[in-house]
Image 1 (cartoon, rainbow, N blue to C red):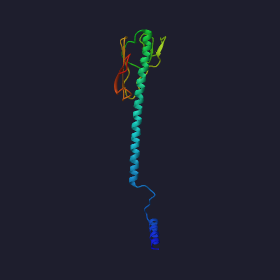
Image 2 (image 1 turned 90 degrees about the vertical axis):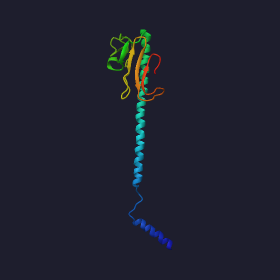
Image 3 (image 1 turned 90 degrees about the horizontal axis):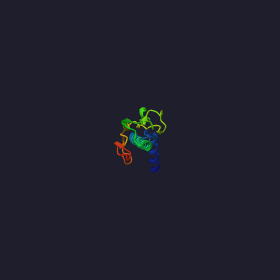
Image 4 (image 1 turned 135 degrees about the vertical axis):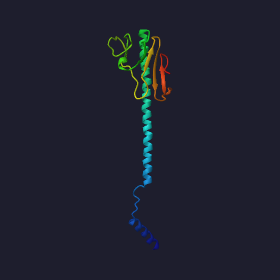
Length: 164
């Protein structure tokens, strides 16, 4: 019977005690908050990098589209549109057609449109697409925010043959 009295006494102490084991300790709560903070920070980093990478992929795609349209222009006109440091995709160079300047604000006066909407740089980040040509060759300068495929971050140049 003494063993039974000890168990009953132990149970009475638990019932009368102010200490409850139903909640969390402060250390457990701090650890949980820190873990949530670390996970949130990692998610934010991944999302920001994904947005940057998607803008860079769009820039490379834009340059490929412009190069294709310039190839069509060359096939018809036997030269590229002549310009120096022309910012592509802005209002004054929003269309590539068979008119005298090639790049112009709209399609008025065009009989053939090669690119109805010349793409512009995706903001934020990157730089304007700059087009320069003497008629025989061209160069389009653009930049990337980060490493994308074979391309490193920074300034790049596209010409009729490659994108570097």
